[in-house]
Amino acid sequence: MNNGTVSLSKGGLFSKVSLLMTISMCISALGTFLGAGITSIGAIIALAIAFLVGAFAVPFAAKKSTQAGLVALAIWTFISGLFLGPTINHYVAVLGWQTVFLSFLGTGGVMAACGAIGALSGRDFTNMGKYLMFALLALIVVGIVNIFVAFSTGVEIVYCLIGMAVFAGFFIFDFFRISKAENTWFNAITATMEIYLDFINFLLYLLRFIAAVTGKKD
Image (tube, rainbow, N blue to C red; front, side, top):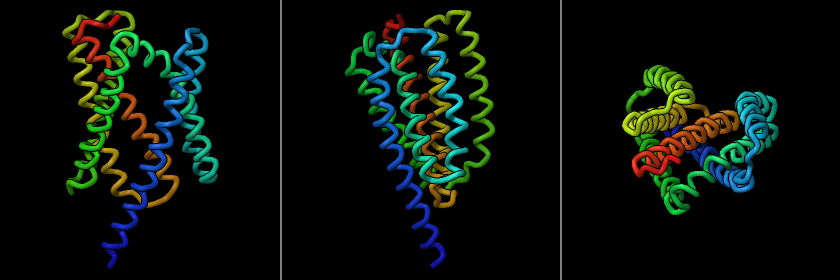
């Protein structure tokens, strides 16, 4: 009887996350569309700061009340979309909208497959988190170096493959954590943020990989 209750509880949390993720992606897509024409460096920096601040503000708001958390999540994903707009617009111009759209669908497929492994395989992925964090820090450091030192095509491809592998790992780990978490709106909101970030980062690494492989980085 208890097992059935737990199962229903987790199913409820997955339903909440699925709903919020769908809404968040729609809001982000609107922001991306509206932000496609942003060219001001100052505006992009301001959006980046707002995005980073929002990553801390959303959980804080969600602790205060569910309504505040949901509103904060919507605002944060919209700002995220505005911030991503110029980048996505660049890839649309370089690769074509069909490739970008297929990359989006492909990222969704990877998320679903990895999410199923994390949530349904029955394996304990608890220890996976610390390795992923070290890998993420390494990606950030290498990314900063790349600002000042251009990568060769080979290095670029390897870097993107590692990035995709890391965020595929985060899909597994974050869905595993959802399967173990209590069914609350606070957990749903924070889990949605994590999955959303995994999705966006995987998509960006995938687009960058395609651009490198096809020789269309510029």
